[in-house]
Length: 360
Image 1 (cartoon, rainbow, N blue to C red):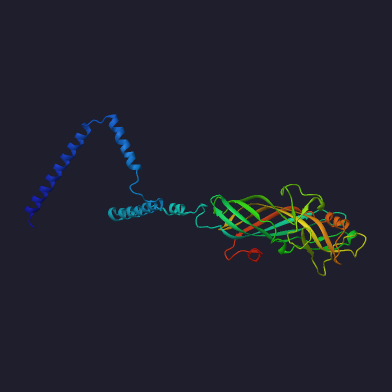
Image 2: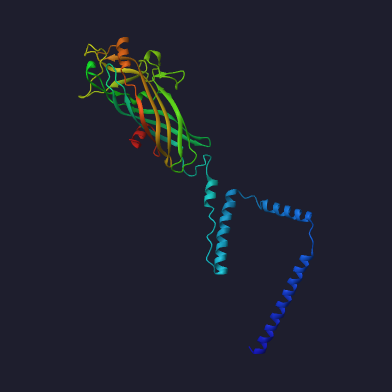
């Protein structure tokens, strides 16, 4: 290729460039000379706004968010390939897609629906009396239920399935003995169900997990379950929830070398009760935070009240009114000092045994 040819080719390119520049200049002059009326400006702006707002197709919000993410990735690749610049990270729309995929509860992939267990541990004390020494101890309560997580919140329905109460001691006048009480788990299987409604805005850790206090009665009933607790068992209506033919629910005295059966006569150490029929009220409230998916911990509001309806002596005889009154007036009246709870969704199935295993 000779020099004359190169020179001729360069001249042609330069002449073409000059013509393009002149054309662009004329176009700019023509645009500047044209006048647009205010009405035309308003109409043009309205058309542009409608074009921006009108959907191009009938894509769902999830498809639009996914397309937006893909477009961001393509733009980033074009910048990197064409300009040699460092690639701009593609816009991440995964969070938006996840939000759109959340269920009615608005809590994403974390499910709170299914069998659940709750364990409460309360530090309690009780005052002394004629036959009762003051004392301190722990009450443990296990709840077994089924939770339903929906748009209106988390609702858990079930029953208290197991309770342990501390031992208590009588004064020297009443024998100076140690007594323990057992409430059979079977007594709770026929008790009224308890429905707990939890405030649960999000499954994120440390978010609020709260429920207003709710009362459940065992062996008794009240017109106002959250009302004042009676001063005597004679003022309380009894219900045979364990269906054994005795008023209230039947509790058993703990047997063993360290334990004695409670006396039902101050002056006769041989008169003792082996079974006591009681009415029990438990009030539960929760004020905690989420500790994980389907789990929560925190402070509990607990009240445990009890009254005696009657008893059976060690010889199988029914206690008389005076003997029953002695037991009723000397049962520990628990004062809750503090209480904690643990709430857990059970993956392997529910029931009291599963609750006791998962929340020992």
